[in-house]
Length: 335
Ligand code: CUA
Image (cartoon, rainbow, N blue to C red):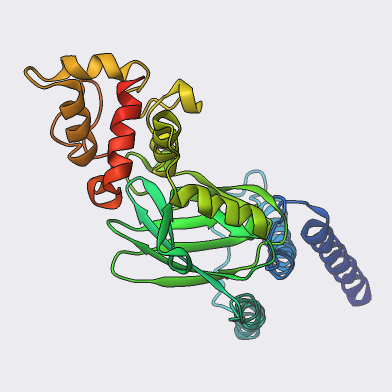
């Protein structure tokens, strides 16, 4: 009888481990990968999914077994026997989880140290989160600022992440990279992108009414493409329409304002199609140009009916150069 029990338990254990391994390494739960840290992170994730699967099946299996095995017999109205406890059982179920947690903890720590290791030739990029947009600054390129993240393929990049208002979370699934953006604190994260392409960046911390719109892309480019992007961003084109379009895209206006010319359709803020004519009608006695200038520099001054105050960044007036502001107004007046 005892031998049979041991045999059954052995079969169940082996089956559980088999299912755990299959779940961990067989399920493809991660998105496409585009950074060097993915391999270590994905392996850790697979091991944890495997262990979690075994524990889940074990606990739920024991529970379901007990529900049927020890259910009340028909006509049995009495109480179940009082059981005081079992010291050796308690030691076992404390010790085993403790060992598992320590092993996962040491393993995780080793992965973290490996992926965050500093390397030479790092490009530092400052990530500034604010309700509800991302800003990326490049100290190496005269503090160039962009609403879209551009990276050089195979170049290690150190992000210095902070927030200007509430807590946000800087998350790039394809890089297996996520870090809170906390006001008053700079958090660091190292990523080496390995594949060129465009990858989504999301805010992973509920941060207010515009949280879902706090999206942009990471664009991984070859060095010469990156250099071209830098040059294009630092010089405004002579053509006023092209200049305005560039400013509109640089400050991520399309994330909230629909504008056919740049292909944005968002309806978080008032649409910009036809704004050149409408702008003159918004505030009595205020011309279109003055109205647009005020709306960019001081967006809380006048709120269009049906739209919410507080969503538009308050500091565009400080971040934009004079030439950019003028280009933007000229551009909008022609819409
Ligand atoms: Cu920022 Cu959610």
